[in-house]
Length: 126
Image 1 (tube, rainbow, N blue to C red):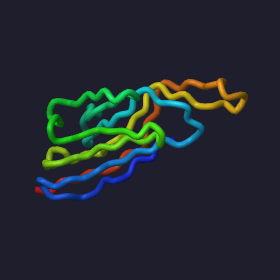
Image 2: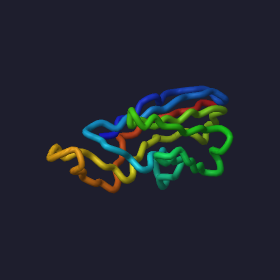
Image 3: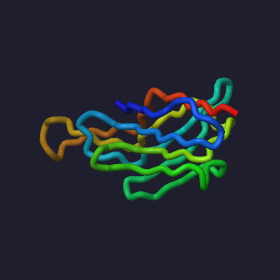
């Protein structure tokens, strides 16, 4: 399960920090990321980060948003600065390549390709 938090209402130019923690008997997660969706629009990439720390950003977020993760906590963060009204959306966290312990032994792992969090609303007022 992915639990996102940190959304809210902020004025133009303000900042917010989103967090998303994966729970369960997790061994590792390959890629974690953030996507966002406005009503009536397609979900779009915000940023992703690999287990090794390689990052990828959508062009409109470069220089304003910073993604990071704490592997030991299975948590991904999104620091959002210089927010604009067009950043208003529901932000979803995503995990790709999830290995979990099955309980049948320390090296017995289950693989799940993809998991989504429940979303957190970010509203930027002008």
